[in-house]
Each structure stands twice: as C-alpha cells, then as structure tokens.
Length: 283
Ligand code: NAP
Image (cartoon, rainbow, N blue to C red; front, side, top):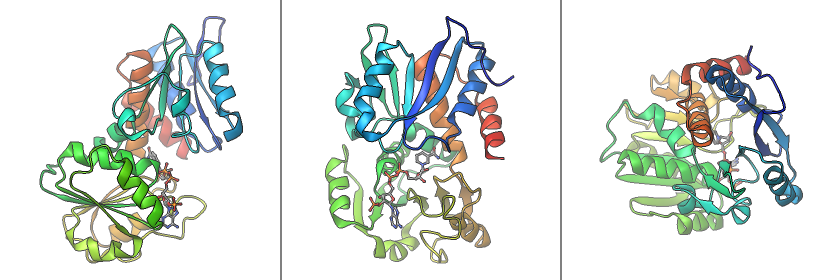
C-alpha cells in the first residue's frame, strides 16, 4: 500500500502551490513515508496567491510538520518565514519549509541538490554551462553548477529587465554572465552542459523546444532538461538524434524530494521507492 493510514496521531506534510493537481510529490512522498514506517501523510493544497499568508499561518496553527512550496509562491513566501537555511537565504527562493516544535518556520531550497545529483558522475572543473531561462529554478541551477566547479556559466533570458534582476540577486556572481535569448545558439559551441529551465516543451506544449538546432554543441556535451513531462521532451529528442547525452527532470524531481523528506524527518530517504512511485505517477 502506498498511502499511509491516517490516525489521530498522524503528522501532516504537503505541498502548497497554484496549481498543484499535476504534482507527483504526493505519490512520491506517501510511498516513502509508508516505506519508512512513519505515521505521516503528504497532501497537495491549492493556495491562490492572495491566500498565501493565511494558508501558511493555518498550517502553522494546525501543527503541520512541514511543506513544499511550488509556483507561484517560491519567492513570495520568504517574508512569512522566520529563518532561511543555505542556499535559500542567498537566493531568496524556497521550495521546502519545516515547522519547528516552537511553531517557527525554517525555509530551505533543495532544488540545487536535486539538480546536481545526476551530474556528479563527471568532473566539471573548468567547464562551461549554458542555462536557458532566468526564473526561480535557474538560481538553483547556477548554484548547482558553481558547486560542481563550472568555470563559466552563461544564463540567457528573453526579458532584459528580468535578466538584470537575476544577475543582481545572484549571491555569488563569479563566473556567471547573462545574455539575451538570441545569443543562445552562438554560445552552443562553448557549452559542455546545456540546461533548459524554461517551461518550453512541457505538457501540453510538447511540440516546442527552446532551441531547434543543437548541431553546434560539442560531441561530449550533456543536454539537461528540467522538465519531466513528457519524457523525453522535444529538446531531448533533438539531442538524442545528435547522439548527445541527455538527462531529463525526473532524477532531479526525486532527489529534491528526497532532500526535503530528510529535512523534515531526519531519515535517510528511500530513493528507489520514490523513483518507482514517480514513474508510476508518470504512467
Ligand atoms: P519560472 O520561475 O516561471 O521561470 C521560467 C523561466 O523560463 C523564466 O525565465 C521565463 O521567462 C522563461 N520562459 C518561459 N517561457 C519562455 C519562452 N517562451 N521563451 C523564453 N523564455 C521563457 O519557472 P521555474 O520554477 O524556474 O520552472 C521552470 C521549469 O523547470 C518548469 O518546467 C518546471 O516544471 C521545471 N522544474 C523542474 C524541477 C524538477 O525537479 N525536475 C524543479 C523545478 C522546476 P519570463 O520570466 O520572461 O516569463
């Protein structure tokens, strides 16, 4: 059984976002909670932006254990938290909150940890990354690339004001350069890693790709799409046809979820069970 039994003692975990109906997190986390034998359950909660503070105070008042935070609340939630742990405190983007025993709220961000997980098999010191998009997850991707040792990181975006704001908010701008979207193709020959952090290609937009031609990438380059629906995206299909190494967003989804579960419970997460649950949800 992949759903925990609910009793009077059951502790509550969940996800706040708008929308949340598409999320695999409930399936993944409940499978993990059952496997760990924890008396806890994970539920999705649709919270509209105007209700964010009331929802957070409600979870606090009801003694929840913790919750994940997704679009559009990852930055808006920061003023309602009591403290931020690294790397959330540097970038101001939160995807996980723990409610402490005194009721105070600790925010963190597990996306960077999730992002690097499938990349750790290679040595990246001195290499160059090209990141498409400069939204919330791009902060985590930059932090992850810096942790892996990348020498140069290019971030391209379609909106010059947002790009400027992104650059200004980077806690460690060393080695990071921003460029307009139209520069992406010309930067391909320099990239050892190409990362898509835009939603282009995600269901229902499956016919589209942020870039149509990847021929300028070097043969050993990796193409990493944060999207996990569909698998593969059109970007990864183009990369596969050029015999490039591809990574989709599933491993990151599982790894960021596992890190969140450990942050709440202190237990070692059952990665394989979480992966199988996410795959079942995808089917
Ligand atoms: P976000 O904060 O909304 O950022 C999206 C970025 O993509 C923004 O810079 C946005 O630019 C840009 N963008 C959107 N449409 C574009 C277009 N047509 N052309 C060029 N740029 C475009 O979203 P996010 O939280 O970073 O998430 C982005 C994607 O990553 C989503 O698909 C999400 O599902 C995925 N994700 C996956 C995981 C995982 O665990 N696998 C984790 C986090 C996110 P504007 O600001 O100008 O709109």
